[in-house]
Each structure stands twice: as C-alpha cells, then as structure tokens.
Image (tube, rainbow, N blue to C red; front, side, top):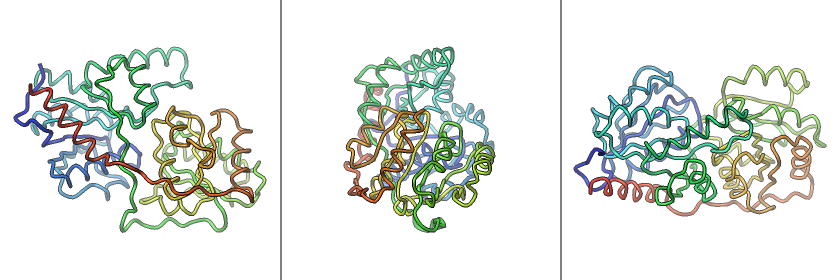
Length: 364
C-alpha cells in the first residue's frame, strides 16, 4: 500500500540528481523544476553535490537539499530525505537514476509516494555483449515494480518502454522535454574562424566522438573546423587522437558551454556520433536554430526528430564512410539549411497534469 498524500494533486514534487557537471538529463530536470515552480508547485531538489557548471541554472525559489557527496552512492540516502520532506510525488529524471529510485521505493515501503520516471536513454543497447544485454533486459523488466508511471519523450520511445520494460500502456505517457531557451548571462563560446562542425555532449565513451575525429581528415573541405562542447573522462583519449591525426589546428574543445544555442546556430552542421541515446536534445536544439544535423541511428527517436531529408542525415553507427559522405553533402555548395523547427505544446503543463492524475489515483 502506497503513501496517501493529503492532496489530490502533486502540490509538492521531489526530484534528484547526483551532481551538475553538464549532462542533458540534469539540464532538462532543472528546466522542468523551474517550470513546475513557476506554475505554483513546491519543488524540492536533492543533490549529491551542487558543484558543476549547471549550478548557475538551479532555479530560484525551489528547496535545495545538498548531501555534500558527489558520488552516485550518496543518493542511496534518498529515502531518508523523502521521509523528511514528505512530497506528494517523486520524479526520477532519467535511466541512470532508476537504481537509486528502486532502492528508495524498497526502503520506504508503504510510506512511498507515487513515482514517475522519465526514459532518458536507450532501452535497446546493441553495443552491449550478450551477457550484459541479458542483464540489462532483466533489470528493465523490474521497473514496473517501482515506477508507477513512465514518461517517454517520443512515441517510438514509449513503444520501446512498453516492449522492453513490460510496462502497461496505461502507465506510459509521451511528453517532450521543455525546449532549450537562451540563458541570460552565460559566458559566450569562442567560435572557430571560418566554417565549423559542432558536437555537443559529454566527453564520454558513449558519445563516440572518436568517430567524428576520424572522419575530419577525410572530408573534402580540408579547412572546416570542429568545435566539441562538453567535458568528461574521454578528454585524454580524444586529445591523443587529435595529436595522432595532426588535427590540433582544426579541433577546439573548450569544455562545458553555459548556453550552446549560439554556437549551434553558427555551425555548418551539428553532429552526433553516439553508440546509444535516449532522445538526443541536441538534435532538436540544432534544428530549432536552423542547423542541419548528421546523426548515428543511436535511438529509435532519432528518425522521429530527423523525419525529413531536408533536416539532416541519419547513418548507421559503425559506417564511417556514410559519416564522411553525409558531412560532405551538408558542407557542399548546394546544401540548403533547414527552416527552424520550433517546439510545440506545453510540456510543463503536460507533466503537471500527469503528476496530478498519478497522485489522485493513489489517494483513492
């Protein structure tokens, strides 16, 4: 039996994250928290550590609980904070936090409020070994036991959630992330001289920026630069690859960008070379400012975003020749930049309507 709130609506929402080092999951969570607070809801944010470049985006007016420990396991104490805060609903902002969520649900038992989780990463992982893929599928099948409702960002991701998690259709909804907006006061990114490609995302193995670096010397345009915005553990390996390929004068990696939209707008092409993604927000952000995209087929959502040939090109993950050909096509003299694709709907209102339904159904 679940915790029964005194409210029929989600007047108090609690969400959580490990730290604020620049991931898309955390950035989207902060935008949502700001929107929920602006709509008059009480929002509590539990953070292992508030340090990191996204700290400047913590919305004013929300209740911040900092655990003082940036390690992932610090969030194993989430149940204690839930007991103290007594929220109407928990929001799990992405796949990487579902283990924390499951533990909190187990520890809270009957006192647990309803939990809504967002699918932020791929549920089908072709790059995994057979054994790892089997374990991942088994883990996904446990999610209906501790998540009351799942939010996918596109219809295809919702279908994948139902298939891979075994989540009933009535417990799966589709709500896009709030669109990125210009961030006032963000330090401007120094842009390369001349034409440039852009990649935006963490410097981690999942993103496979090595594929993009390997393609750069093969492009017909030997002057085009590459701007990689992000930070992470793969920086050393990427620096070594840049040196080995002699690309030191063509690649710039300045780290995290407070507001990547101006750099995306100025780029010739936005590129995503990941092994796997959820619903890659950078593709939507690039298209919102009229920049064409080239992306690996790293998620079922990629073709939902790049749904027409005038928007960009989707390629197989391991097809280096196709990556070069797609980039040459969009860098060619006949390439036409797409008309900006603007977001529609009100994701904040959609989330709050869902939260209210979930809370009300658990109070009955």
